Length: 131
Image 1 (cartoon, rainbow, N blue to C red):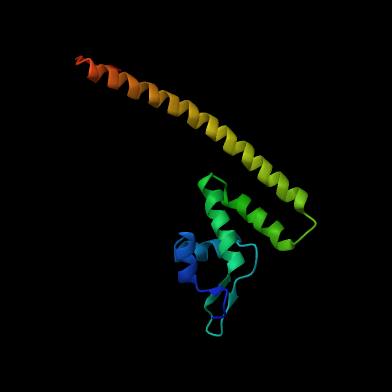
Image 2: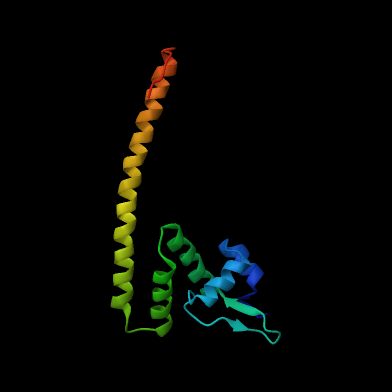
C-alpha cells in the first residue's frame, strides 16, 4: 500500500464501522468516490475516503437516512455544479436534527423533574410512591 492508502481493516478501526458495514456502504453507494483495489482485489481507501466515512458515521448518528447519504454521496461524487442541491439536503437534515433536539430537551426536562422529585422524596425519608 502506498502512503495515504488504507486497507479495509484500518478504515474500520479509524471510523468505528465494521468491515461488513464498510462493504455494505460501498454496495449501497454511500461512498462519494470509487474504492480502488490493489492487484489482489483488496480495497484501498484514501484519507479523503476515511474523512467522508467519518462524516457518514456522524450523519447516521443524527438519524440521516442511508438514502439521503447516498444522494449526498452521488452529488459530491459528481463534482462541482450541484452545491445548491447538497446544501438543500443538509439544510433539511439540519431542520430534522433541531426538531429532534427540541423533543429530547423536553424529555430531559421530564427526567430532571422526576430525579428531583425522587431525591426530595428520599431525602425526606418519605414512604409511598413519589410518582
